[in-house]
Length: 279
Image 1 (cartoon, rainbow, N blue to C red):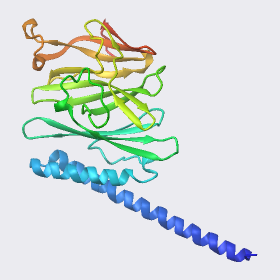
Image 2 (image 1 turned 120 degrees about the horizontal axis):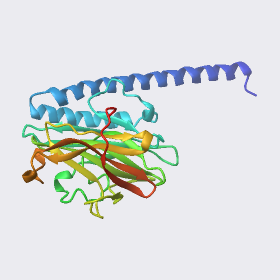
Image 3 (image 1 turned 90 degrees about the vertical axis):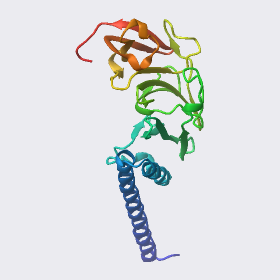
Image 4 (image 1 turned 45 degrees about the vertical axis):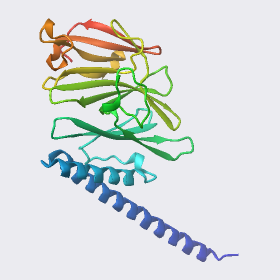
């Protein structure tokens, strides 16, 4: 029989070793987060494009290293404001997304999704922006290797459709045109799919898999989740003059509202809502 004193000594050594391990991991995580904060500042503020791209490359490697930690899903990233980090309300996944503006006025998008798996492990999937190669982005159904890049600011679960979510995103497109995107995300175990024809409304094609709203880059479009009425509320966009229909650099809000009403069957467009000051 092992003496009780010896047992206590072994337990004490275990506690010390574990505490050192936890402390070392916390210090490493803190160092990596500090690096991300500095790199993020460079990505958005460095005048030289090559240096911005280099900082972004190092940022990606550092973020991946940090997200490989077993407890990384619960890291708050309180000081990291350079990118958008959103967790699904059911805590099943977390999405990281950001953009990099190039000297010619175009944008590149980067991201990753961190998923909980059935065996309790975390799965990290990169989001690879292939938007320049997607010829019909309104209709395309893709996976994470062919992503219509955007920077997401909200996640809305589709109640009644298991494992389906709406992602609300912003996209700088060109120096003249900005976009807001309603993206449909389906999470099926380790597999994720972007885009699904769930949109119904006047002038909305049956094959529409995501909604993309294009407007003047200096304008601002409201697109938000209205939890009280379970709908997506948005500005109605219109050209400055009727003759400019289809020329999106001349589009902007016209002081009226539309909404996408959410149900188990998908989304139904409701047009010309009464204007309310609360919005």
